[in-house]
Image 1 (cartoon, one colour):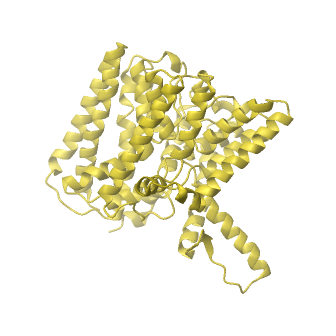
Image 2 (tube, helix red, strand yellow):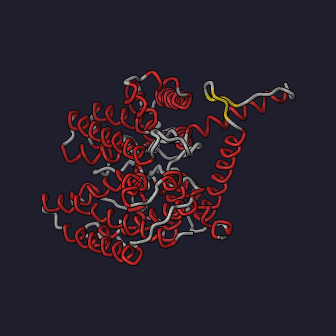
Image 3 (cartoon, helix red, strand yellow):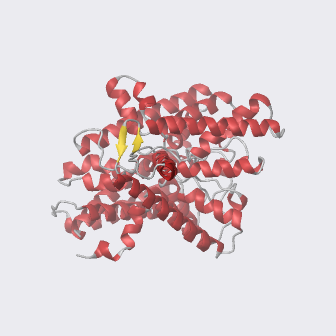
Length: 482
């Protein structure tokens, strides 16, 4: 383990992150909301800590190994969550406790969207901006951003990219050089954000709300500047913009890159994961709209409008709301919550287990059923025309089993804090899948939970964002063995 080079990278990245305090400080000055000192102090603390970490090891030059990449990734997300909480503790409003500030910060950076804050409409503009900005940085992964600048500092970034980028096949690159890959991802990400902000503004949002919501929409985060979320606007055009950008932000960014390079959209429908993803959204939406109409909960086109928005929002793990879906007929909240376990596509900003893993599991299950009838048949699992190796299939099943084991352990731990089963079950699912809203006691916010429950759920958010293995591998003795 190259601890000195790890400290050097961590110090550099902390200094870079400290400058994220500047935009909200400027917003505070613009709106004169009295929070500027909180961001300036947070900037100073973060920058100086990064400088102190970097100075003793700034001359170190070593190649990173894979295990170094895992440790840096976990350390950086943890450290950012801690330092990102400073403004939330120092600001007079909301002036959160340590556990609440860390929870809110991690929820933003991991794009979970779970909040402990009530009265969001009355928060200072700079705090509102900062919460949305945290999600925007977290959505693509600050590590991927760092990969674009690390080679200029004499540090290779491939190990970091492999540790951060989600999906069952982690070695695929959009461009031959990892630096160019990271830059390509950020260009696409930034372009989508600008387009989304313009769409919201044209649909009727103020410029401030449009920019803030574009941050959390493209990041699949779900934070809003209003307690009522997107429902605050009660505007079908705004909802349409949100649906469009939630859907495309939860698609593999490699497909967006190909569309940009080839000037063609045909390859989207050629991708089996994309087809399955769209089919899931449309199928669940149709079922929800039908149930809402038949039960008289919501009727006609309003049923379709509400169903489409909530299905896209929950299934992509964004977590926006236009209606209280927890009050819908009992099967629907449960169905939507289960859809969030699939989440977005691999290589997207979405959470969950990823659609491609669910697709591979289904195909393997169908293969085993067929083998009962034809025991000697050779039947490879195929995605489109490409056969999936048994190694990948085993890795997917391994991930699925560990995911469920972690879920059960976290659920039991939460029940131990005194929560009821519905609240505990959905709180773990909402944080592990980086979804945000749950049911029961966490349908509106997480502020009423005990401190121990919030720490457990903070760990759950990290597990979900780092796709379980990246974090759990640090707890194995083999990882630390020379």
